[in-house]
Image 1 (cartoon, helix red, strand yellow):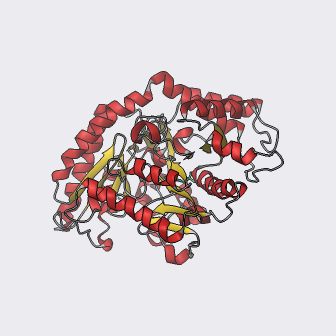
Image 2 (cartoon, protein in one colour):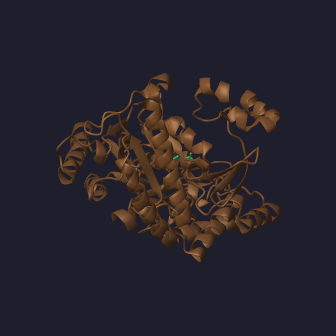
Image 3 (tube, helix red, strand yellow):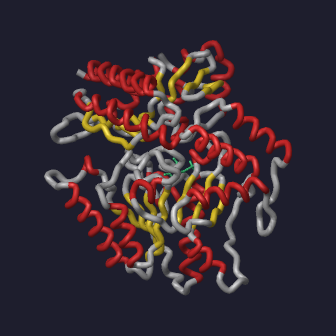
Length: 459
Ligand code: PLP
């Protein structure tokens, strides 16, 4: 069934969207034909389309609807703030109560001395700001050449010109946009499934760390200012690094005076059972954490760079200097109020512990799909997971792109009332933290059925 058929009862709405609304990452051809699936309501983990059909949203919006949709108290908090103080200028030396309270709360939840919060409008603007901060920090310390940034293959750090260039997802149309390459370096993705044949996990980890050391030797520690890494690569395919990898990369950074930016736009706020994954899951205290998404559970846009007292002290030293970056909506009172309410709900309902408990069950149940013929790998950590399809399980060779199996699998799921996200040869899931065990069963059984159906179509 096409989206067009879904929306027949709302033809006018569907046509307006198709004719005028430009959707990110749209594939123009199919969009012209199918238009989009238009949602008009959401509650908990469920979405309803314009024709009243219900879907379980195992994507969690876009890795973000952590507390679930349709929360009355969240809507009330947003409305109360909008009415009392819907906006105030956050530049220079004016602020607002919600931003002050949220900044203090984030400082309390973040690891180590990460006590300074620079609010942004989302994840891309947080990463962009963090990269500017790298250059500024080193400049102030008398190392103006330390502007280069090291990232990894299969990473995604946002969609501004700079952040998309820093990221490097497979299949992104790099050549079409002439992304910035100067001063940006990409190391290998720490993808265990795709490691060289016959190599064990420790040796793979050694190889990755050596690759970083080699790059530093080649480019010069005097030119490399920052290293950015998602603790678990999200859009690049739920890449859980080898044991010890992040800690060793962090140690390399410290040895060479390179700032470590943990991009926790996805991994924070309970996605894998912690406020932040860096320290709790991987034992590192980065110099900066960038975050967004689950910070407000997607109710309103908000991002943040949470950085160390050490960086602050360096930037502020001497007094007459300022960090000239910010957005009209920096520290937006309505967004910050939503962030506070979001954290309050997570604390009160114990959603981190719940994500750990149900997340482990999700891992266990998903593992049962590994036996299906099309499935090469099932991987994930708690409520971040994916299934990777292959043409050959021995060689791990992918299916030809034109087969489009992951889109076919997600379409088959959609027809059965389940949203999973197709990405390259993966089907990705990051459900709200309020998902129940019964709903986990539904997701896994439906996805399994969709994979079997598409496998039958392919033979
Ligand atoms: N960083 C990571 C790890 C992300 O996954 C994303 C978005 O998916 C971003 C940054 C960009 O965030 P936003 O889309 O809010 O700009």
